[in-house]
Image 1 (tube, rainbow, N blue to C red):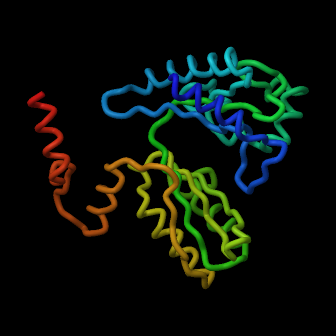
Image 2 (cartoon, rainbow, N blue to C red; image 1 turned 135 degrees about the vertical axis):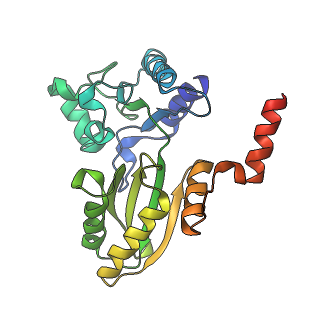
Length: 246
């Protein structure tokens, strides 16, 4: 909790959204602050933390807060519904449209730090695939084909973005449930669709962290291992034995 609130304060200190430009939608210097259950922690406990963090961010930093996923009311559960239009649009819309006003604080956003979108959710894997082309239409077409909201792969959110300084385009993705749609399955499908446009994959990128289980799923599936489970990994077995003994 303390680390999360301090991170919001440091981001506001260092980042001025009126002078910041980029291709990815954002509404805050600290754009999203998710609390994610690991180990025996429950999603309900994370929701409680999210609400406490949101209150502190407004009370101590005067930065308005929106909630998303499990911490939000239903119409705001999807992050893209809160973030739509980015800082430039939301800073105006929040003043005149109650449906777009923050959940805590405001209605005006912070003039340079915007708002923080605080949530509770399952582990999300941020994953990008770069394509050897400058044709943004191809990246957008592939993103449309694979994202869940367009009838594509379950638990996949995707955008097509330009990378002009690198002479590439990118399919930028959030995998919101890697057990439904594993990372390697997304890579295979994007590669297949890109090939249909006569385009090769340049490389893929993992943004942030991913859980060990996601790698185990990919490993077992790609090698077609029969009867594989987490306890076949020696470090997992040793860790469990240590926990039992302690």
